Image (tube, rainbow, N blue to C red; front, side, top):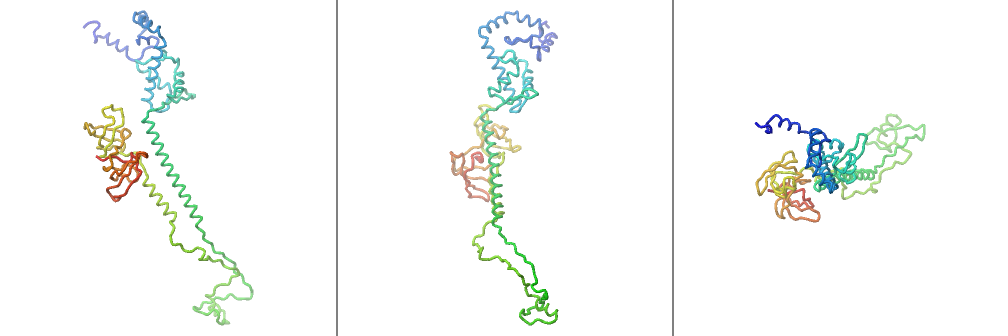
Length: 390
């Protein structure tokens, strides 16, 4: 075995020493060469290749600095996007993870002198949200991917729609309560004192059934009581009674506030939506580019739904099976006359026939063809709420 063989102890020791990070002062960014000690770095600086590289850099130093700056920025932002997403994180944490890679571009070869200058530059360029705290600078990546922006707008639209429904219901209930209070005009009876006009007059009650009030009164107290038991007590003041002519009976009976609230709740149930729409045996389209052009915009059939948000799909043309999230799929709108399955809203789970499509409002009209609602026409159903059946 020769001295320079790959498996010699010296060669193995050299490879072990070369792993990991080395001292920055013994690294040459122009030649992208890391030396292990001062003597090796000195020998490298005196070498012909290093001198030739310096001559090339001296002709246009700005070009080399711009190249290294661009490489450093792209790698740093890509690491921030892939590793932390849109979370707020300390800039030193990202930088320490970036420099852990042995072949990274060092900051002393770029246009930025410190990490703070680079962080401020990211904020000025609009690549990240930056803020300074007593613990240092924090950065947050701004995702400008069209698919992400579209997904966020859709979530905000659904949230606003749900909030509007709740506010509308609360306002409706409040109006019903006010209307009920205004319509409730029950008159309370007026009570008056029972005053005796003559102190010597006796109070007489007639307990005899069918006794005449105009008959002669008996001299006995028991007879007086028996003759006047059914006689109404005399009152000094008039008693107000409700005139039946003031409120004539109405032919049509108005709905009560409770009935109207129940109807409102039923209408709300019809517009209830969920954040998951996958269903077996429907046709979907793959809209993610992460799988390559081979599967992009390809149609597939959902074979199985896992955890409501993940589906196993089988491609129509190649027969490949993939496991995808619902954010990477979209519904398929067939031609009018085909069978579709309603995936969201109050008519979820019903099979219907596509009657017409409204391209301006991105909605369609569907006639339900199965179940207890057969024959009912559903208008204005959004594209994302139904899909073609396999």
